[in-house]
Image (cartoon, rainbow, N blue to C red):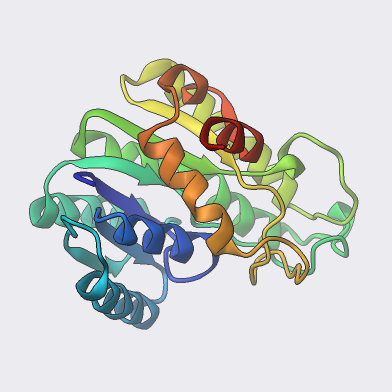
Length: 238
């Protein structure tokens, strides 16, 4: 797979699984996260995997620390990634946080500090990720913003997370209207990660191929300015 992919929040959960899936397909992958040690471990693990994958044209795995709350971190991430790997074909704006336990965090009990940090990471972080990626995007690039039903369906106890995801989807749609690149939302359904705390949901590895499909095979018109998910993926690949 001759594509270069940049993934934020790539050291765990969906981000880690998506980065791994792209490596298994032979893509060149740039990873980032706010924990530098975790980024180094992720690069090492993906490099070992890349060396043993059966992909015909496995690419380079590269990474550096970048906190999506800091646009200057992201600026450096994309500048260095492009210098090392070339133009970016796919951006997965995955980094996100959830302070508290899902279903047990009433919005009225969320502190201003928690609300601000959640929005800065999950919504402004998507804005900053796409903004800083734009100068480094290849022709026909795609930008994927992970989200879920919490962004448009009322669910109790989701704190600032649901608000931030609704905002992130709005950011994605606005960029879709203004950019040549296709920008869309990818909804993998309920996924068991440290973020969600849901043990009975899908494994991140089981939904990672959805993101590969959305980045490389899904019809552009279905993605750009819209949301696609498991139903569309399974219908197209069954």
